[in-house]
Length: 190
Image (tube, rainbow, N blue to C red; front, side, top):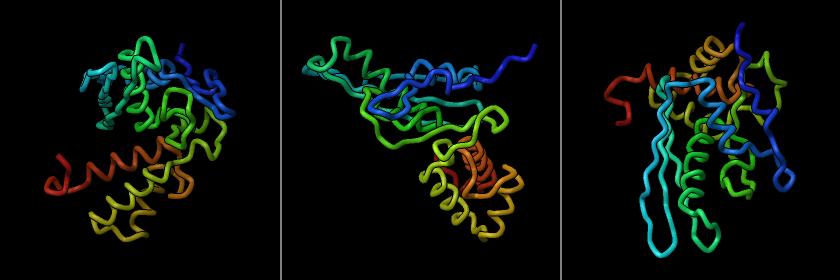
């Protein structure tokens, strides 16, 4: 029996009127798609009752993100754990496993990234469309590769089955990965 894809909509809660997906559910979502992903955390600073954590998430497909989180003892009893959770949540959000209220991971909504699961499993909504940073990244990569707009449009259509403006988060991530893979080695970031 085929396993059903992870449905983040089942786990959304409301925070100040906005949808919020707890970090534990973002982790489950990411693991359902990428069981081999690597999540590493590091305590960067711990002084005067303040902890700063860094989390790195690396997907087998090559996607990677770093998230930072800080917390103080005055605001949260288990502040080191809270800082770690924030950092992981932010890294996952940067990879598209998040909601509008996800960025702070302490209940303070901010506009951030979304991830659109496969279209056949979810209703398309503007909340799950590719983000402005993703679109900017695609345009920057295309410019570096000297792709003409019509060439980029054709690549996007071929890769996603849709156009630049209607790509969802997952599709945009795939386009970024595809463009990164096509860049000459001398142009790739280290």
